[in-house]
Image 1 (cartoon, rainbow, N blue to C red):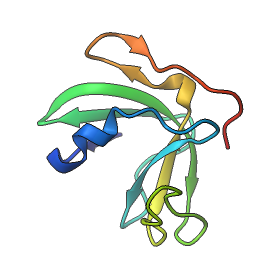
Image 2 (image 1 turned 45 degrees about the vertical axis):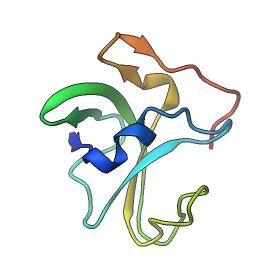
Image 3 (image 1 turned 120 degrees about the horizontal axis):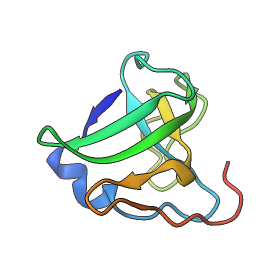
Image 4 (image 1 turned 180 degrees about the vertical axis):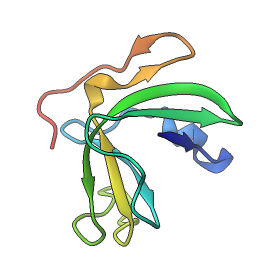
Length: 99
């Protein structure tokens, strides 16, 4: 599944998640993917990162721990150990257990 990262979210996109947390992308509607599917993150149509879907949550189960936002969205979480920066080919560092 392709995820087009809007310009306003690009700086934050490269920040490491806090220890013990998964990153997610929130959608208004059920996402067209399932656990184990690849995600391709794009900036202006160019692929910049990839990851593998770890889980999908329906609205209301969680929200962003940092901002309290996205509680009403369908969330696609990816495995931190699967995240690859396609600009460099490097995988992201992993911290301890994830939830």
